[in-house]
Length: 328
Ligand SMILES: [Zn+2]
Image (cartoon, rainbow, N blue to C red; front, side, top):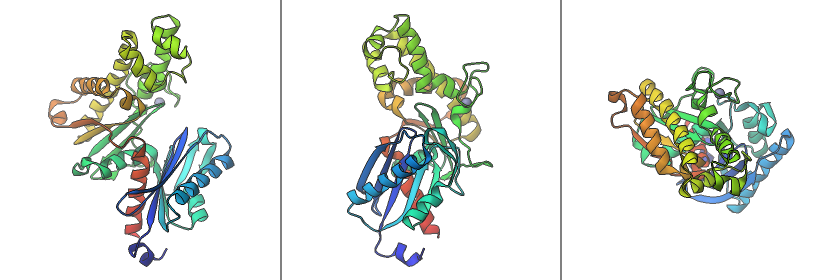
């Protein structure tokens, strides 16, 4: 691409968030003001359908923005993936195996494309677009259906040897504990994700120890979502509260270990569970950190909730493609 067209009277960039259940595209101007947005559900197991949906969501965002000239596209996608080639290694929810996402988009739109793990990109977005920008070393943890992590060292995403560093959700926190989706036992994700919480809360409901949950959503794990958990706790279901607190404490334990190893200045917690129960989550995470991080290393570490909500990934993706364009 001709460098002159990028630095001239510019042009917008696109940030795309491809989640396991929803996808969103946002067009930003050079000051990161939103010009256009589009959202879609992404539940399609067929490779071509997933591809069509992404192309459509991008086209709709462009139309919503009045079809500006776009300099590049940044994407956050579920991993594992290769951030250097933009190839998605394996994403069963979208039907992708060794899928060259960056090449497909670059070919379709004729502009540069960057692809990175969605939680890396979300952490990067929180860093770029908030006062976290003053910190050089940041750890992001996003508990949801799974638990994703992103690590920024010296303001750069840590990719490691494989390209897939930062899998905080698969740190072992309970040897011999429940099975995880990755096949191991006792991963953080297996004891503290929304699904892990829902599994225990469903058991409480089945035993009639959580009448609010039983009445609102029965014992269906997919129905026991963050908002309902928050309402059950507000309604005084102390056993549900105990389950959520225990999960948040495990996240604090994992973060305590990460603080000992990486010594970040800030930890940012995002995702639906944290959004729905911020005070409770921060309290237990802090307790877990206090019990597991060395005092000198945890001193003055800022632990806080994410600020950008569902825009963290698109915003981070827009910053990443912008940086890529500037380095061209
Ligand atoms: Zn695991």
